[in-house]
Amino acid sequence: MAFDERHVFTRSQLERILSKCIGKTLQEVDTQHVLNGKRNKGYAGAIIEQSVLGYPADSDRRPDLLVDGTPVELKTTGLVTSKKSKANGDSGYKAKEPVSVTAVQLDNICDEDFEHSGFWEKARHLLFVYYLYAHKTNSPADYGDFPLLGYQFVDFIGEDKELLKHDWEIVRDFIIQINAEHPEDPETQYPRISSELNRQRLSVIDTSPKWPNKPRFRLKAAFVTAIYNKYAGITFDDLPDDIRSLGELDYECHRITDLYGGKTVEELFRIFGIDNRPAKSDGEAVTVRMFGGTAKKMGKVEIFAKFGVHGKSLVLTKKGGRTEDMKLFPVDFDELQDPSVGFEESSFYTYFSEAQLLCSVFEEPSFEAPFAENVFLGFKRFTFSDDFINTEVRAVWERMRELVFNHELRIVPKRHKDGTPIINKTGVPSEAPNWPKSAEHTVFVRGSGNDSRPQFKTVVVNGLHMYRQDIWIKGTYLAEQLNMLPFL
Image 1 (spheres, rainbow, N blue to C red):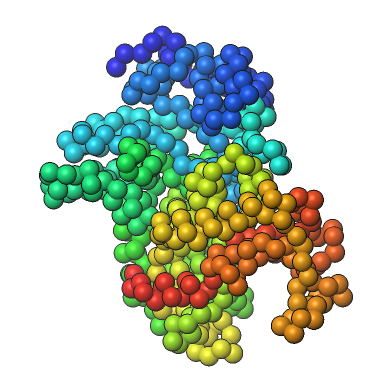
Image 2: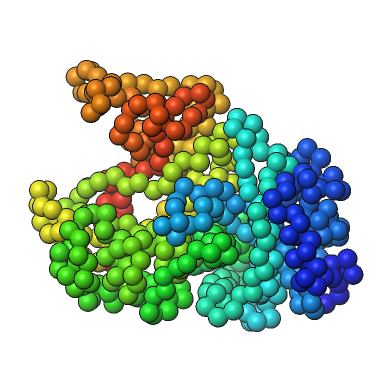
């Protein structure tokens, strides 16, 4: 593998060069004027290559660098601020989007093994250079103002290597299957690579873009976020049994259900020695205990963080009907107000395309019954379909952008069905922004707050003050979808 001498470094050289850049903006380190007012996300990487490390861009399939004799792939990676706290297993930052590694070599992959694959050649040793994707409200992100946050050498070994290998082999074997079943026109089947694998079977990598564009292997954003969080010093809970794929997760869910299915929440609390009075907010903690962990949140369990698994407690009626709507994630208004961000680059798309909702399903004996009396039925793993994302989710995202950019956003009074104003506990008329509501949408926006005084409305959009706004999904829709899924 031939390397131009400009791509050859020692690790100490790279550490010295990159350490001097931390805290500076991309504009400040762009000595070669790569950016030049352009806003393409690829320019962040070009700045690190050409201005910081001093080598020209090239399209060679080999890794970018030779570091102390080891080929290393450089990945300049954007992070965005996260609304989670360190108590929930978060550093305050998360990967903006998946990280592209290399093309899926459709002509060659069927004859490859993992150890000698083009993917492993690129992914085995990585150098992440992290920058903060920091928006300016109401103006396009121009990248020049984005500060560099840090850098991290990552060598995939042990569990992480096995996760990558398992996913890569799923893709390879699927392509082998397609070629065998459709030898005359396999290309007609290649769209299935993404639609059938990315959410249901692939744990930490996916393939994108969709056919007819040639697919590329990517590290999922949740996996990259977990890598960064460990670099930032966040500690995770380990489970006693290794889970190396979504398939193994499903099997473990089945085993746990055999052990604990049919028990009430109160009985589970006694089994696991949880002293506090059972409440729905403890649902995640109970689920983690069933897996053998000790954390209160599934996001604090390393393997769940890497897989992008979101633990949800879902209480159904005896007829499998609706209980409550479900909160999913807070709205990133900096991103929403950035006209340069497309839907498939947005945090909306990333969440819905990657999220694995692991639902701990409980049945309530009656509407009035306390959570402690609910009975654990088992687990269901739910992912959102391409059709749902491209219709329901896109429609809400586009409507929110219209409200912002067309200056149609308003704060409107909330009223009872008879038209009289709703007065909150502080004696002030209740009001809310005219974001998409549950009356018209399956995915909708709802504020999180209970004190209408101005000092508690910390989010400002188009000059309007409001509570933190979250994306929710209707409980009726989830109940309907889960009723069609078998228990794991």
